[in-house]
Picture 1: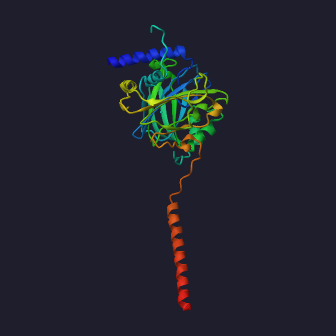
Picture 2: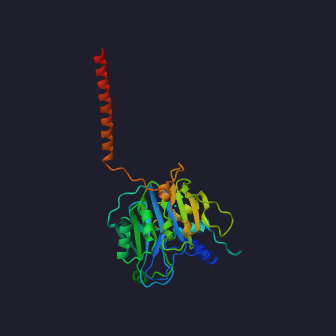
Picture 3: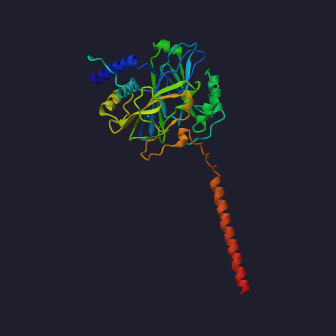
Amino acid sequence: MARTRTVRRLVVAGITAALVLVPAGSAFACGALLAPNGTISLTRTTTLAAYHNGVEHYITSFEYAGKTSGDVGSIIPLPGIPSKVIKGGGWTLQRLVLETNPPIFAADGVFAASAAPERAVVILKTKIDSLDVTVLKGGAVAVGTWATQHGFFLPPDAPEVLDFYAQRSPIFMAVRFNAKRAAAQGVLEGEGTPVDIVIPTPNPWVPLRILTLGLKPTQLVQADVYLLTDRAPAMLPHAVRPNGDPGQQGIVRQVSEAASPSLLADLRSDRRMGWLPSSGLWLTYLKIDTPASTLTNDLAIDASGYGHPDPVAAGYAPVTPSLPAAWPVAWVAVLSLTVLAFAAVAGRRGIARQAAR
């Protein structure tokens, strides 16, 4: 308990220093922010994709900054059907920020598309504090229709962006911030609710293009993406190294190193974070600062060690449709007919030779 209290004090101190020293704010998840006629803004997002034993824990925080006339919603594309969606650690994301952006004190002081149903199908529903969470399966039109029918505001570019994701995976998570319930629970403006989306998947994946939904081409997208994997991952698109310029734009790989024992011990001491291994993980920190017009792909990750991130998962290559189930039978039939044809020709030639004798 003493260690936990100490870690919490360090995290609070780090956050306070970050708020003073770093102008960028916190996050409303790694997804599209959909507010009804309000002035709510999407600030810098922070996400952790932790991958171990074939399961991705996609952890992000939902919070809001600004005034609105109603509830606020967000839509997040997912690479597969989550086994569960639960509340995340209380200060895990803040501890990661503290690890990679230590505060400066004064002297004294982490794809194969399946057929999508015509109408969105609700796979999972749950409530996490002031959040109403719904996991959906459906194509771009189906999910867009469901969203509008449930009070989500969709900007003009929503059909194109949703279709970009639905072609690869028809799974989406819709999250609504219930303002009345938040007020009853004493949730303050800017106070985040961490959510842990547990997804069995061959490789971790982080949606990035969704952050551009509703933005003008010149608007800056800002995000902090943390990866915890069993080994150093290969990524697509490739991240660049920092050049020393505080205003450097693009996807910048700020940290790529073995996760320190102290970091893992601190993260494991957070509530609901005991699933993390105590050692042997690799920490990657990507800082994203780029205009919306240039963020046209997602982050595909190969955590296997083979170094081949999937271009389809990144959105660079189109999805190759799977062959119908009847195709193998058809190919067997074609092959059988071909063999029989050759046999018939050979038999006729043999008969002709015998007759010539």
